[in-house]
Image (cartoon, rainbow, N blue to C red; front, side, top):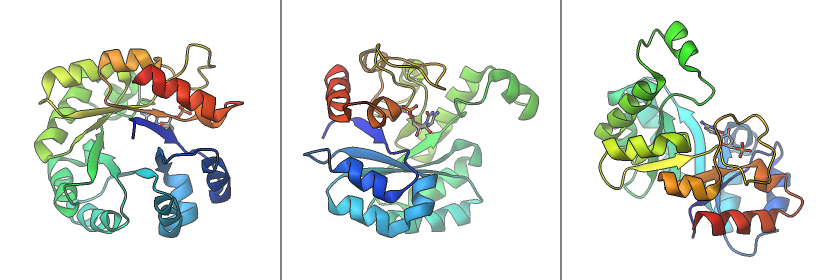
Length: 225
Ligand code: C5P
């Protein structure tokens, strides 16, 4: 399977199942809170039964014990990738790692890409640059045993330079040169993301809202290869 993850940002589970029938082979999909809260574990199972891989994007953030117990449950759902907020701290991330089998990829979210440097400094009272904060969280995630981080493709290079080989960067904010940028701000094309060091790209609307989703998917896979 390739490393293009399709963000299934649909409201209804049936829309997802209809959309997936377009694909002849299994793909890697991202399921977020909206769909998971709607369809639950049974819905995940339906997707796994079709041999698709799942990145369950629930961004856990709580005390270590609660996250450990929740991750143990998520681990049983046979998902391939899960995530949490690095802001929950080293102990929380270690607890999550303990709860998951080695086969499940655990990613940390550093600073959300919707957070500006100004917001971070005035609301969170973090008095360093956004890049320093992202890097600090990435290193903390690595120390805790996470497999990588979700970040902007523009941050991949500096993260790779400061973490061990094999530490993953999984990056949304991808657009084909011909696409609308929609609400994404710092975007790159699949080929540029590859060049900058993204290990996986997460792509939603350029595929899900394309006139021909398969053609768009194939083009993105080809560009990212
Ligand atoms: O439609 P689009 O390609 O913008 O979708 C990107 C996906 O990645 C969405 O599910 C969005 O919530 C998610 N995401 C993001 N930026 C982040 C983290 C997640 O766009 N920093």
